[in-house]
Length: 148
Image 1: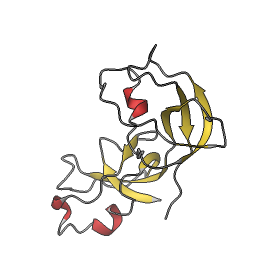
Image 2: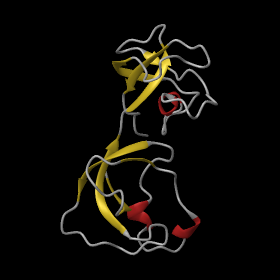
Image 3: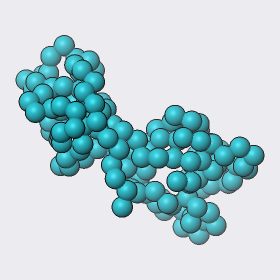
Image 4: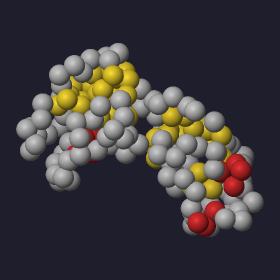
């Protein structure tokens, strides 16, 4: 899938969550090329179009470039019980402990607390020694969500 992305993120392997149209997009001549992704979905840049020019953008100070992206997998912490490759899993729920080394996995960007995801792979133990909410957690990789 080809889209336009801010030059700061326009490198292979960069991941981002598409947040949708900004008010600054109104009237932009590149809207149809730029607003092609699904809101709230995590994407990974798989290719940067070589030879493409940097286009002016009201949202990105350094402009935008044409890139190819695909939906990205998400590494997340889920309840250990029933977590195995091929099963469906949900996040354990919100966590107020933002200083915890595992917080980014309990509340991963691009994943919803209410949705079930296909577990592609078991990664192992989360980075924290213990969970402040007394949860038994396993780190997994969710398969990329399906497109609409």
